[in-house]
Length: 303
Ligand code: NAD
Image (tube, rainbow, N blue to C red):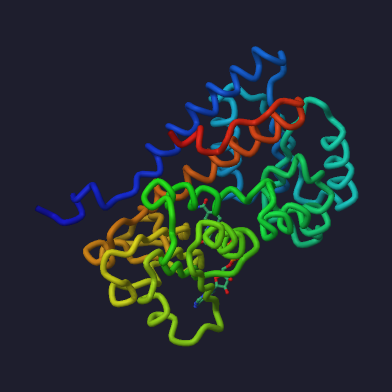
């Protein structure tokens, strides 16, 4: 039997995220019965970046599926920074909008930090506002960036407590690497963050009980970087051409690493669907706060 047919090693993000979205719908419907209000998620897309358009389309589709209102704003590539900031201001004040997502990357003439900082922290469903970042690192309740939140839920579903475990993250971005480190610390792991200036990257990775790869280099992590039995979370989404076909691959060489790891997320179908589920989860959680209702514990969505 082909070892990659060993399903128990594959972490299916589609199944896990679908179960979470079902719970979100159930809790959202109950919230609606109590308050007669529907959570609204505003998505702002600037320009025509093809990957961003696909992400936004998927996010809107799933938002509607769980019964939330989807508010869409598509702006021309040459919209001014002031016009975008004014739109964010308007959404900040709109009572029908509980979450605001400005799809990144923004065109070069717009300062992304300025735009992200303009979003009210309570509506910052991407968890990128400095106030939410500070709260996350202080162990306070906050909106957490969706991709690392999704990864932490995946890891929790396999190992609820990481005491004594070594987690290695490759990548130190504000979107994935850094918040991932904060979440793994909160789960009691011993955490190492690697990046482009790390020496002997493969030997550091070989120490990992949990390896999170968030780099953006196709199939960079090879079998001889993996500790036997490690849990591998592959965040990378890279479009490459193989045998004259355009395909998506992660930052981990899946075929090579499969036999050595304990568990692995595939690309596509691993972390990606969890990111969208967590966007909806953040929208629901902040809707409870904005509707003056007590939010259920995060664990209620994972049962
Ligand atoms: P980024 O470019 O902001 O950060 C990449 C990080 O990798 C940097 O911190 C850099 O130091 C590190 N790096 C670069 N080259 C390296 C090398 N040779 N060795 C070690 N480290 C190196 O990217 P990002 O936004 O963090 O995204 C990373 C990957 O994750 C991308 O492929 C992106 O498409 C993907 N991503 C996926 C999702 C999802 O939902 N699955 C969400 C966000 C990002």
